Length: 148
Image (spheres, one colour):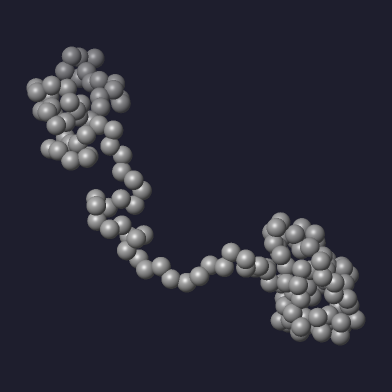
């Protein structure tokens, strides 16, 4: 080891400039913040979506449509889904608990059975709502459909 080979430990020297530490540092006075304006002052924090006084995007974009707060939305389950459930797990009754346990619906979902697909198995189905075609298909296959 010689004096000319000595180096400081890895990570001990920081590259960042120390700002606002006197005139000799080269970053004194405004400390890199420029002159005047909100960003130059202490305590500045911009609001989310603030665009410097320009009309913000969420106010520029036109609003349209109507959201009905009384709307009841159902999770749709087709007859083909019921048929695959019956074939896979060989069940004869399908209710909300079974659909939840198999991951087809979430905990608070309302379920509506729709008539897409064919139903060959005799099933007892319990759901929140049924379409006309689904009701006919379930009864035609010899099963029962009951609303909750």
